[in-house]
Image 1 (cartoon, rainbow over the protein chains, first blue to last red):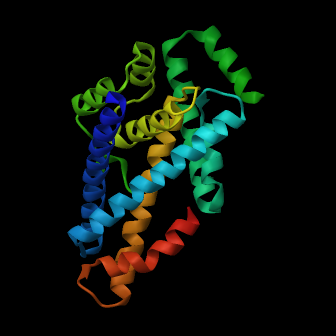
Image 2 (tube, rainbow over the protein chains, first blue to last red):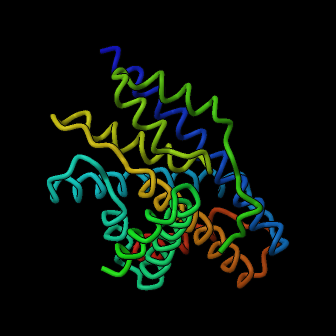
Length: 124
Length: 114
């Protein structure tokens, strides 16, 4: 029973955190276009985002389970973004960007021999 | 899409308190701290939601660091799309402030697009 109380409390705090970030993002959009967002709208967007996050999380978990994995990976995220072509391409590019950053980091941290191995991997 | 220098960041302590309050297993805690970098609060939100959902079932699912970052991007795009579309709707109706009715009008298409 204690677990469910903690869970509710955590969910409430998460909602508050999402609300805060949504507020900041809306504020920035409002400044860019010189139109302010009413508090009601920000609350509505925050609630919608939280529910959408729930849907995403369910999908991600289902995809990982389907692939018989216990860890959600970037492939699962790419699947979640499949509905819109533009979004799909954007996520694909971001994912490659992240991979490239990691490879650059690897090259910096390790010696010449390791960097040769990394180049072979990217060719595959 | 929004620029990186306006990144909205949460206090790491807040999120760590959230995580440690919730996760009973040390191993899960350590994995999550390792895999969630502190860019914005969205990665942690997604990680926690996924783990909450999987707790009901026998298998515990965690989220890789990269996947969390990508999901944070997706959520950020979602919020920005919602904001920009609502704002455009307000603009087309010649309103000074973005009201709930503008958001309601763009909501169906937004949900279908995602």
